[in-house]
Image (tube, rainbow, N blue to C red; front, side, top):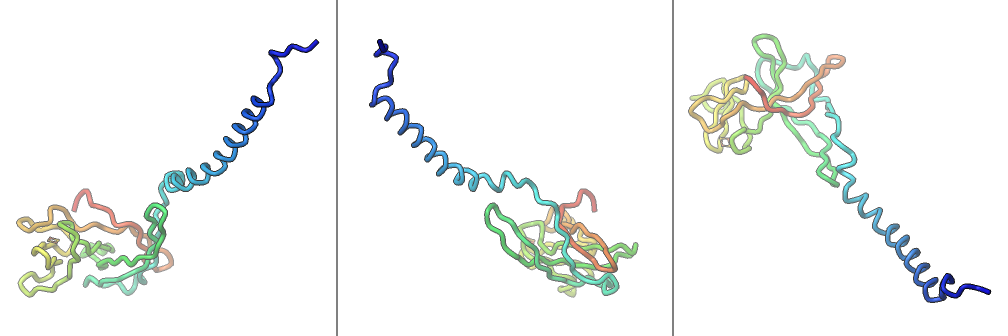
Length: 169
Ligand code: FES
């Protein structure tokens, strides 16, 4: 004799089956979406990419503005953008690559563009001024020095990475 209570009814069987299949299909549809949504988080921080900018023997004591393309990743969106740097040799014979982005509100600084501010970087937006080494001049709007590019020299070529804020001038 069979115990009727322990048997699964046709209705229950259908319920279990449909719930299982439905759950599986739902998970199969949602998993790629969740993966896509959190993908940038899973990738983690990308290592700094260094890009060729100019040959070391072309670098002079006079700042030269050089533009170079870099890969930019913004969440899911990857693109090529142009960066630029003011590059020169300091009096101590060190290579300095300064970001031209004014640390006040982000305009672009120019070198030696004003007769009254000789040998300085000048920002035309609000009159920000920086010394040749990119240090902000007191009494002008910027409150920190121009950022400096991380650099590498390989086979006589200057490669630049990220522009970073300076702790000291
Ligand atoms: S943005 Fe350069 S001084 Fe304001």
